[in-house]
Amino acid sequence: MERGDRSGADGAVADRLVERHFAMQDEYTAEMSRVDVTTLDPMLRSLLFTDGTVTRVLEAQTLRRAAVEVVEQSHASPSPRTARLLDVSSGSECVRRRITMRTVDSTPSVWAESHILPERLPTGFVGRLDGTPHGIGGSIEQTRLESRRELLWFRLGAPPRWASEVPPSTSALIRLYRIITNERPALLICEAFAVERRLDVYRPVGWSEAPSDVANGSALSASE
Image 1 (tube, one colour):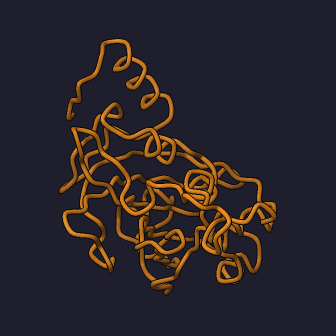
Image 2 (image 1 turned 180 degrees about the vertical axis):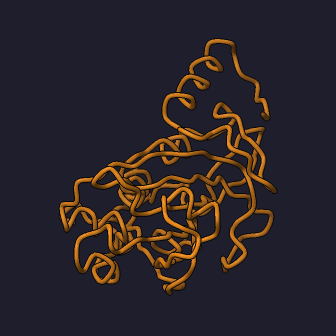
């Protein structure tokens, strides 16, 4: 694991947090490297450990609207690893959804690929996805789906190959988690947060600065 300039106390707390909240942190992942929690900007740590809606965290951090843009949504057969984590056979069919997430007037700062099993979700759940700017998290709230997020692992790697508008020299903090409902996994989601390393600390790219004038049209309105 990559080590930052961490004190013994901070490092011990970080290790306990990871062990407590990520169920499969020791799983082998090719082409990605481990990253020490203590080398992450606090905003990134908030995103990494949240078990809620990422768009809400982005808006709270930046005071700007966050929007989801669909890149692709299609039926697909899951890979063997994806099938294993969704507890289905590798020949099964799921919905694969790829999105970008950005705050107003910024380049995409988050990319996510989801594998969805509609038969384990309320009727019409997938159809609701395009009707909410907050994507899957918004659909879960609208349907009042009783569910929990199980964080699996996080790594440092590259933005997904299908991503566009990637700033130069951008790396990605990647996390994998699944959403469990009725005691069975219904969605497997891989999120990649755009990051850059400055002064030995990984910081978010594209939304690290809050707006200086919340009265302008791009800021998040207090009434929303």
